[in-house]
Image (cartoon, rainbow, N blue to C red):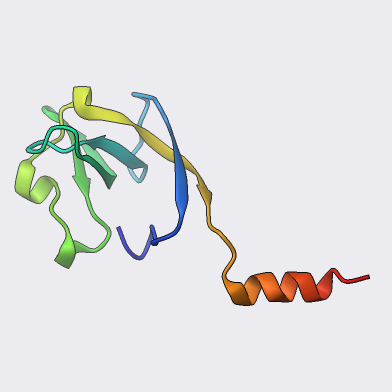
Length: 98
């Protein structure tokens, strides 16, 4: 999901079935049980949610699997924690010295 999600970020997902187009959703991979996937919900379809990755060239998504059954969707991402880079941490420490 680069560039939206980056290595080192932590996300919290909220269990919900109330999704909207544009939400980032976490679901159980349609072909690999126990493997969780994050994609963007694009639209609601008869068979579930059409989901796509933000990096189309590097993404397996509904273009491969079809719509995701709502029973496989665990929730949507709603909060992100991104640790400071070393440069950001130094700047904050430097600016907070009394």
